[in-house]
Image (cartoon, rainbow, N blue to C red; front, side, top):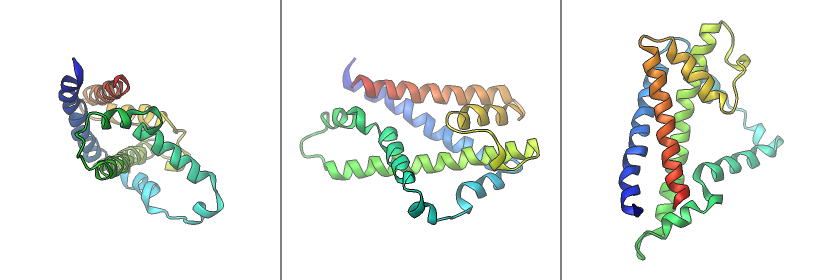
Length: 174
């Protein structure tokens, strides 16, 4: 198949999840209670955490390395397919910025869903027992399943995650 085919398939496996992210974001922020989740995500600033808890920096750096796939050599593999005169520094900055931007946007969607889930359960967002993978697999399916046509929303979420997994598999195969 080669790079040409996987590149074409990647347009779909990355393009559709980006569109779906904005659909999920729009749906999540329109739900009752979503503003409390967004308030927990971005509305409370405690900058002292950055100076008093040093492990925050380590966790953040680990997340970026994992998210970009830097430690797996994926960017090196992709870079080997670029033309020699490509602006490598610019490409690197675009990839890093885009990755962080979409992670930031996805945070809004997840925390808006958490706010709605807290509203449904009659509790505070901070008291919900979700962390790690539970943020996606525990909140979005539960929240979207309660909507009209809920099972179709859940299928769309799982299809979205499947596409992202396929895209990651292409990256590992490179």
